[in-house]
Amino acid sequence: MPSALEFDPADPKAALAQLPQSQAVFALYGAEARAEPYIGRTPNLRARLERLLQPSAKHPRRLHLAGLVRRIEWQLTGSEFESLLTQFSLLDEIFGSKANERMHLRAPAFVRFLVSDPYPRITVTHRPSLREADWAYGPFPSRAAAERFSEEMLKLFLLRRCTFDLNPDPSFPGCVYSEMKMCLAPCYKGCTDDRYAEESAAVESFLATRGESRLVTLRAQRDQASAELAFESAAALHAQVERVEAVRALAAELVRPLSQLRAVILQASANPDEVAVFLFENGRLRGPVMQGTGNREQGTENQGAREQGSEGAERQGIGIREKGIENQGSEPISSAHEVSGQESPTHEKKLQGEHDAKGHDFSRAVSSQPNDGALAPAAPIAPAKIPRGLLESRLEAALAALAAPSAPPSATIRQGHLALLKRWYYRPEARRAGEIFFPDAEDRWPAKAILRGIGRVAAKTLVQSTPAQPACDRSTGREGAQC
Image (cartoon, rainbow, N blue to C red; front, side):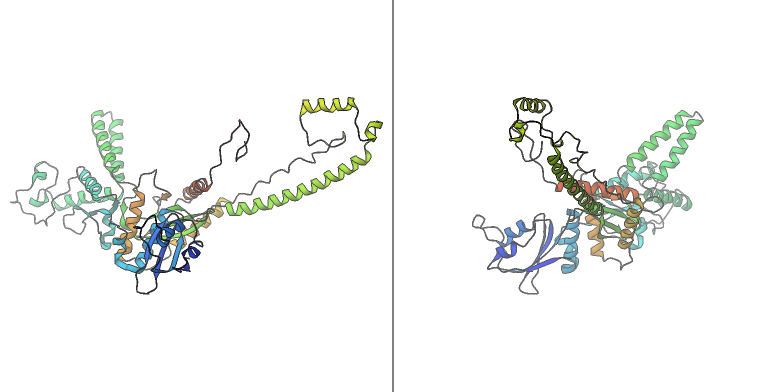
C-alpha cells in the first residue's frame, strides 16, 4: 500500500526527514484537486525529494516544487522493473491513454502472418489485432530485427512477398521472385491453391515453433541419408539445418504467438526475505506477489537455537562457578608460602615454563582435575530445512492468484506492458536484473527451476545489500573486521 504525508512548504525538512532512503515511486500533489501530480521514480526517495522540495543557493536553475506541493505519496519498490510497472500503473490511472507517451513507451514489433488472406503472406506490425493474436509472433527488440527475421525466414520457403491483393491471372507477367524461383507464383497460377496452402501451413508451423518443426524434419532426413550412405544428400541437408538454425537464432525465446505469450518474471523485493513474482499472461503484467525465500522460517528456528544455546551456556557457567567454589575449598595447601599468598620461586618457574610452552589455557580448572569441557561452546543447532513440496505448493498458490480471471486489459495497458516486458528482456544480460521462465511443451510451469531462480535472486539481493567490510591489516592487527 502506498504511504503518504502532508507537506508544509514553510518547513520542508520536517517532512523530508520522515522519508526513507530507499528505491520508490512517488507522486507530488498540489493544493488544487485538478492540478496534475508530478510522478517519478528514484533509487533514493529522500535525496530526490530534497533536490525538488528544498531550495539550494548553489543550484538556482534547479526545478523547485516546494511552493506547489501539499502532499507526498510514495510506494517502495525492490527493482527497476517493479518501479517502471508501478509508475506506469499510476500514470494510466491518472492520465489514461497518455501513459505510454509520458513514459516514452513504443509498441514492440511483431511478425504477423495474414492467415485471413486467401493467399497468406507475412508482414511486420506494431499493433497486432487481438482477433489474430494466434498469428502475431513477437515481441522483437525493434522493427529492423523483425524485418530481418521475416526476410531470412522467407528464404527458406516459397511464400509470396508481394503486398497487393491477388487476383490470379495466367496472363499476369509475374515478378522477379517468381523468375528467380523464390516464390510459387500464385499471381499467374504458377501453383495450385492446395500447394500454396501446404506451403503456408509450413510457414505457420515454423513461426509457431521458432523453427523447431523444420529442424525436426531436416534432421530426420539427414540422419536417414547418412544411414543409407548418401553422403552428398546428407551434406546438403546438413547445410539446410545450419541455415534454419541461423534463422532461428534471430528470434529470442521470448518470441511466441501473442495468444501464447506467458512468462514468470522474478525480481528483487523491498523486503530482503522475499522475492517479487510477476506473471505476464493475456497481454498484461500482473503482480507482484511476494514469495518467501525460507529465511524467515529458518531465522525463527535459528533464534530458538540461539536461545537454547545461551540457556545452556548459562547452565554451564553456573557449573563452572560451583566447581570453582568446590575446588577452592578442597584445594590442598602445600607450603607456608601459599598460605601467606606468596608462591615459592620454584613454583613460579614451573608456571612460567608451562605458560611459555602452552600459552594461555582458559579451559583449565583451578585444580588439576579436568573440568569436563565446562567452557566448551555449545554445539550449533542446524535449522530445519523447509520441505521442497511445501515451497512448490506456495509457488503454485502464488501463480494461481496471479492468474485469477479478470477483465481484458485496455489497448493502452496491453501496449504499455508489452513495451515494458520487451524493454527489460532485450537488455544486455549483464544489466538485466532478475530472471524469466516460460512454460514447458505441456504448458506447465517449471516449478523446480523457478524455485532455484528465487534462491539466486534472493542471494544476489543479499550480497548487494550487505555492506562491504574493511580490509584486514595484518601488519598492525587493527581493523574494522576480524582478521
